[in-house]
Image (cartoon, rainbow, N blue to C red; front, side):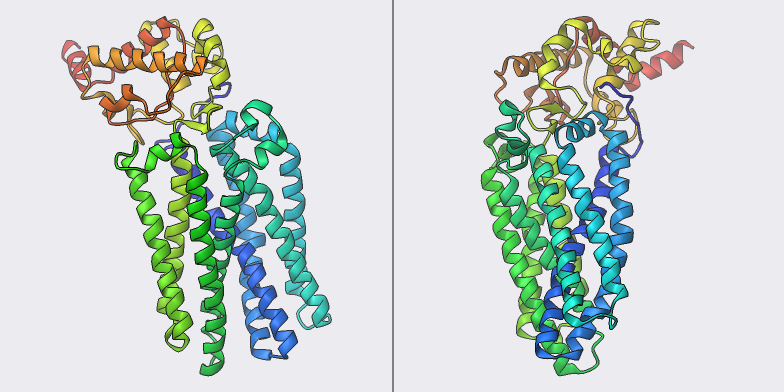
Length: 455
């Protein structure tokens, strides 16, 4: 709320999702691929197996390109997007975890350096020295995950950090270990799926079958680890989060459907991996590509589920998706949100509708556009003026309940009439609430038609 909103017709959250999912697919492969290549080259050296060493060499170029090029670029892309779309949350994460980010960037620099050295030193250093480089790469890559997982899980399950604001309470939150197990499994299954494509280029059929079977072990172990981590993750969630997508009547049916997709995609992946383990000669590029696609569906679905389960917060029980902190609701109800969101308040004195538009920009525009993604015009179109005022009044009361710690976390009854539950509460003065209602009513088609008729 302290910063201007970067308004996109596409929706800021959608843009973050596109960039972030592309990045995590690549970054988790970079970790799992590093482990798989290190393990394969280690076996090749011990067994004096040139075919397996050739597989490691073939796979290393893609690992380098993915880790040092696409991974780095998409990582920067995430920082740019979240800084523009969610500046308040980005600032909070930097201030709370500055040394965590610093450590992660240090490990990433080591990861990039060892990846480049590894690829450049094939046949130029002793095999054991070469192995040391790739294992060092894997260590650096996995340590990046160890740190980032703490910050990612903190946003959904901050746990004791809400009382202590301790760095370690925030990192080692209730969702940390389950998520780390889940993501470790994802690293393995993504690596196994990709390296199977590389193994398919081996012309010797018996040798290729042995490689495929070895990689199928990575895939099966990865799928089982991911399933165990996912179930543990669900178990670790607080009841208010589970109610969003679990149970007979979840608050967000779309997220409940996403959960079904996640589990079915993982089951499909496991079946393909078991097929590769049992019949490696028949596991060729079509089934390998199918494994990759269902792995992407599983991981992408989980990321959507994890992000959606934070509604209406961006940092659970601390900061709402519009950048308002729970701790400042009482003050903003007294002073008004426009006293804080000065960038939105400019020109708000012209009329009550202008003031309402300023309130909309400050409190609603981080999620809703006027006519694009989550169109506010479409939401208010079927709602009559009295009902709209009642909904805003109820959202205002919910804000007061949050401020006093009495909110039940059972879902926003006020917004059920809009068929869009789990909106942040309405914060500000009564005058700002009335102004917002006046502005939203100008968006109703009947109002537009009447205005056109008068003109």
